Length: 248
View: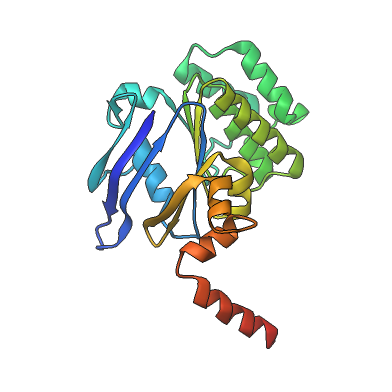
């Protein structure tokens, strides 16, 4: 189980990126942290990864702190930004990652390469790839590892429809095999279709958490966007937005 307890992060300028955030994620779950841009989603993911230090709280996985090497061995990461060694070819980059981690199943790598179907582009420099193709290399590199937990920041950005469907199925397979996936997105509609459970945050604070269908039932909502409006302070702003649009 991945546990986030009372996580708070204050930056040097005094701004609280996230305040008193708690979340438990079981094996076999796909959990989404959702909210508007700047809500604190990436701050939470960076704290999980140990990229930034916590101001308060703790993050553990099966008893290990996020500072422990045993914790880090269990985590794979797909960042929002495309961070690759672009002079390398796709194949060279995948082999680079394999050499760093070792003990990677060859057939799994081959299956993932076939799944994301870059064909002859695997032997072309990554710098010639489109954004979506670069994202596919990131996904292959994350899912080929023997990591129990895969953390993804806005994973659908830049992907075409077929790749989105493929990624969803791949996530379900990982969870079905007992793995855990935690992802962030500002797209609440996508959050509802991707995850078993969602934590919605706004202005650095969690405003609600629960299973997707339960939240929609609770607020008599058709989707998570309506849930967000109903449980946040956006109701008055939504009315204002509608008036302005109607007067255009």
